[in-house]
Image (cartoon, rainbow, N blue to C red; front, side, top):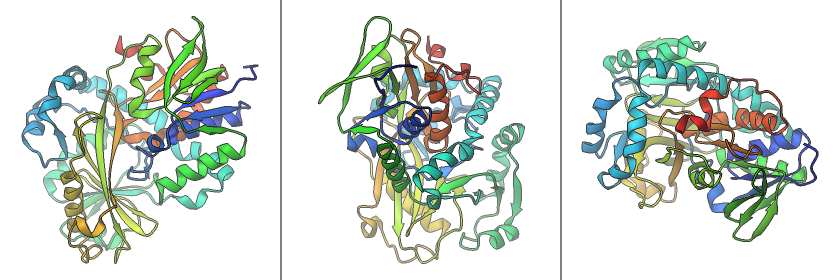
Length: 422
C-alpha cells in the first residue's frame, strides 16, 4: 500500500498492539486510538495463558438444557442476569445453534488454525520488545476434583486430540508429584505441554506498546467515535479529540467494536461476557504453571509476586454494575485448590484492590471476527476473541497485517468472516 497516511488501529489492548506491531514490521506507520482506561479493560485482567490448545467452543452439544440452570444458579461458573435475558435472546439463539456437533467440530478446527501458532507468532514481537522474560513455556494442567468431572470432560479432550493437541493423563499420585502445591482432593489431571503463560499481562501490554512507540507509532488517548469514508474507502477515524487520517483502519476495540461494524454497513450478533479475577499477593506457595480446575471453570496462574484466579462468565452487558460476589467465589476456589498457598488470606478484604472485572468480546460461535468489512475493503475487523484474546493476539496481528498488504492469508478466514451474521 503506497500511502503516506498511517494505518489507524482502533483499540489498544493486546490484539490492537500486536496488530500495530506487525503492521510496522511490514513497513506501515501506525496510530493506535484508544482511551487508557479502555486499553486496560480486558488485556490486563485475563488468566495470562497462551493456550494454542483452547479449541473447545463455549457452546457444546447439549448446551440448550443448561440455560435454565444458568438462570437459577447465581453462584455457578456461568450466570445470566434475568433483566438482561431479552437483550441476550438473539445471541442465545445463535449460541444454541452453534452447539450442533458438526458446527462444533468446524469451529474447533478453525480455532486451532488461528491459535496453534500463538507462541511462534509472539516470538518476534517479544524479541523486538525485550519481553521474553514475561512469557514462560511450562504447559498447563486441567485438574479434576471428581472422577465424573474427568469422564465428563472427555468430549473436550477428544476435540483437542482431533486437532493435534498432545495430552498426558495423570492419576492422583502422579498429579501430587507433578504439582505438590495443589490440594490432594483432586483425583487426576490432564497435562498439555505445548502452551505458555505470561507472568504479568499488564507488563506485557506495556512493553509491546512501548516498542510500537519506539518504532515511530503514536498512541492517541482518545475515544474513537466514527470511521469516515469517501463512499468506497475508509479515509479517517474521528475521535473525541480530533480527526486521524488513515490509509486503512483496523477495528480491534474488543467489547466496544459493534458500533463500528454497524457504521461500516455490516451486521453483527455480538455481546460481552463479564469476567472477574482475584489475586493473592505474596502467597506462601505457588503452582509452577497455570492450573485449571475443570469443574470450577477457574484458572489459577502464577504471576510475578502473586497468584491470580480468573474465570466465571456473567452475561449482563456493559452497563450493569459489577457483582463482586463473583470475585469472592474465585477466592474461595483458590483456597480449595491451594490451601497452603493462601492459608493466611481470610477474606477478600485482605486483598482489597486486587479484585478486577472486565469484558470479553463474545460471539455466539466462539470465533473472532477477522477480515475485511464487506462494503469498505480497507477497513478490517480484528475483534470478538472471547476467552482467547491473549492467545490469539499475535497471530491475529500477523494475519491482519498481511491482509492490509494484500497478501493471501496463511489460514482459511472464511469461518471468521463478518458475512456469517447476515
